[in-house]
Structures are given as structure tokens and as C-alpha cells.
Image (tube, rainbow, N blue to C red):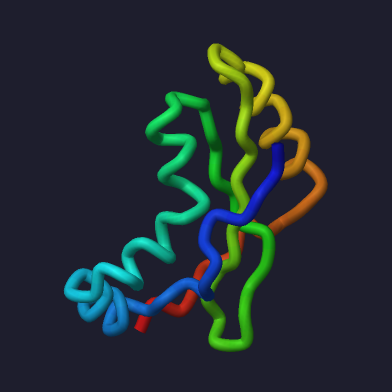
Length: 92
């Protein structure tokens, strides 16, 4: 399965400092990752774009239990035809 990693744009470092104090924001950030963490499903997160502030977008590939090899092959195939993984975000 292919799905977003976060429902929000990637925050910069200043915004991340504030996110830890707001449980609703933390819940929103973890909405797409926590279910797979709890279920034990293997995932791999990959960059798939850059927003207007220069911060990366990401997606995750989710596999079946014991499906690590399949998602690693899928991630490698994706990265072989894109260059998102070579770009550096502006983290200021």
C-alpha cells in the first residue's frame, strides 16, 4: 500500500519545538504512521516532492507482515527513477 506519511506539510525546526506541546497536532502528524507501528506492518518512508517553503513531502510504502524485502525492492525501484532522495531541504 502507498500512502502519505503525514497529513500536514513538513514543519521546520521552529515549528517542531511547538508541536510537542499540542496533543492534537501530534495526533494529526502520527495519523498515517501509528497504525502501522502498532500493527507491526513494515513500512519505508521516501521523499516524493518539495513544498513551496523547500521542505520535503513524503510517502510511505506499507507491506504485509514479513514483507520487508518487497517494500525495500519497491523503494529502490522508485528511487532509481526519481531524484527526490538527492535533494536537501531548507531546515531553517
